[in-house]
Structures are given as C-alpha cells and as structure tokens.
Length: 304
Image (cartoon, rainbow, N blue to C red; front, side):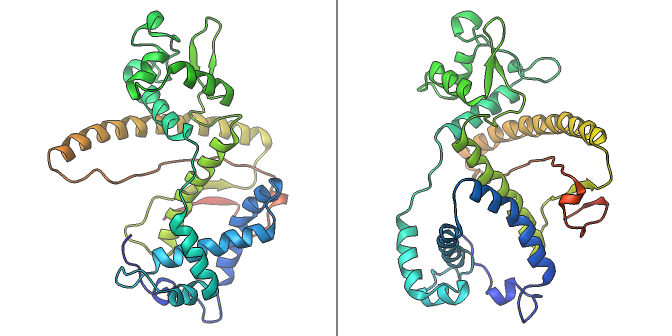
C-alpha cells in the first residue's frame, strides 16, 4: 500500500477542537443502520468496541505510514488513540489473521457474470436465458456447460443444489434452470448476503471518503432524492429504477468482461499488469419522511 500523509495533513481543514458537527451528523446517520444490524444479530457495544480497536490499529498501520515504512507501536498508538500495549497485541493478531469469505461467493459471482454477459446465454431482450440442466439436454446452452466453462473441477449438480437453496436460481415448469433477475443476491444465504454487505458498502464508503478528503480524481458518487411523494409514486419509481439499473449493470458487466479478456492477453504479451479492480453499483431506498430528521433538502442530487 502506498504511503499516506500525516494525519494532520490528511485531515486538514478539521476544527482544532474536534471534527465538524456536519461530519459527526453524517457519521451518526451512516452508522445507525449498521448499529441496528448489529443489535439484531446480538452484537453489543463491548464487542463492537473491540472490533473497532483492531480496525483503528489496522488502518493507522496501513494508511498513515511515513515514507511507506511500517510504523512503530508508539506511532500507531499516537495516530489511533489505542493504548500501546493493545497495539502490540492487536498487530500480532492482525499479522496472523486470514480473511474469512464464503467460498461460494466469488465462484457464484463469476458464473453469474458469464451467464449475464455472454451473448449465447442471453435472450433477444438481454435477459438471462433459461438453461437446460445437463449438457446432454441442452448442449452448450445448459447449466452444466456454463459451470464447466468457468471451472471444470466443480460439479454442476453441487452448484445447482446450492443456488436453489440460496434462491439464486429456480426451476421453471419444464425443469430449466432460470437465473433470478436480482443477479447474485441470495434470498436465504446469510453468509453470502453478509459478504456483499461488506463488499458493496466498503466500496461505496471508500469512494465517498476519497471525495470528502479531496482525492484526485474524484470517483462518481451520485444520487437523486425527493422527500414529498406518495407510496404509489415511490413504487413506480422503484420499478423504473430496477429496470434501468439492470440495463446499466448488464451493459457494464459485458464491457468489463470484454476488457478483462483483452487486458489478460495484453498482460501476457508483456503489457501493463491487469491488477486493478472496480465496483459499479446502484441502490434504491425509501421510508416515511417523518422517520428521518428534518436536516435534508426536499429534493436534489449529489455529485462528487
């Protein structure tokens, strides 16, 4: 990870006596749904406190280095506010820790990307084609062939059973495998949903923080919001957002697959390494205005 500036430079513009009231309000609003999630799953404040302590140490160590050199325990303690004894203990734990991610998520996302990005797997309107279960029934246009094209070591029956239980796919009246149009958002798998909670919110928050800290160039991070609508109007806008959003996601997915194939060929030929990742996402949310503090404009949008 590249060297980062001193905290005083990274946080330039902050009030000497502490963060600005606007930033505090934004943090409270950002954290509220996460606190609700944690309480719903039995995660209490002491547990979160320990979790945050480790994160403060990790971020201070990785993102606030001088000349890209590993900081001392004392410097991590100074930047993070965590006691030096705790810093030493937590750094040793972080060094030994391994990321825990459900194995089905990366593989599943890759399969869905092929299903929604390869022309042969799409209908004329761009929606994912229902696939026969076995190659003996549908040839290349089968779920078995799709799985094999991504990883020949995985049995398609294992993936199908997993996806049926997670709600990623369903079987139609003639037994074909149909991808649920919500793409890879499992309806039953809590671990898989949690993976995407972390992935999507991390990338969205990272883009917003980059922009707030005046990172160059800014990332696209925009929204449209109105506060004086009827439930019927909101439902209409919800459906419109889903339809237009899926078109945008399918187009970006197809372009990314083509670019990935080209970049891999170029990298193997001695070109620039294909070591960059990106996330493009969108969301829709609604609730009664009375449930929100009256601190926002009634309509508008935000730009980076």
